[in-house]
Amino acid sequence: MTGTIKIEGRNLVFEIHGIDIILAIRKSVTVPLDHISSVSTDEVYWEPFQQLKIAGASLPGVIKDGMFLSKDGLLFFEMHDPEKCITVSLNNEKYKKVIFEVQDKESAAKIIRDAMSSNHME
Image 1 (cartoon, rainbow, N blue to C red):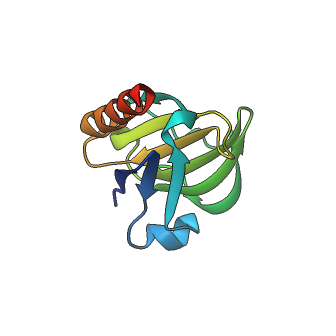
Image 2 (cartoon, helix red, strand yellow; image 1 turned 90 degrees about the vertical axis):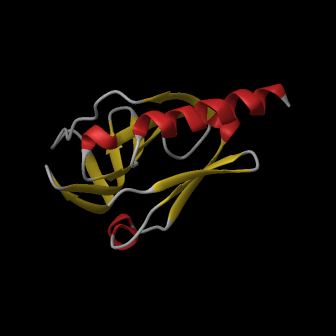
């Protein structure tokens, strides 16, 4: 099940839906737009055994929801289909990256980049 993203004021909100709320142990993740360093639509890989599950659910090839610790720091995943995921890299946040499945990753990335641009102009 894909999640949705929305811009609320100066924040990006990742909304989690359905059973994934239970699996990810949260309903949403909110980050300030000015804490986003980059947005990528590059393919995401499962990388089993490369990250330690802190809270959530993981079954490689099926689901990866919740908090995972990697060599780069704390990551948040909401992923069933890696080909539909965007990766949002963050500064000054608990998570170093949010890897989030959306219906259309190119349009989701554009929404975030446009919001980042307009946020910097204000």
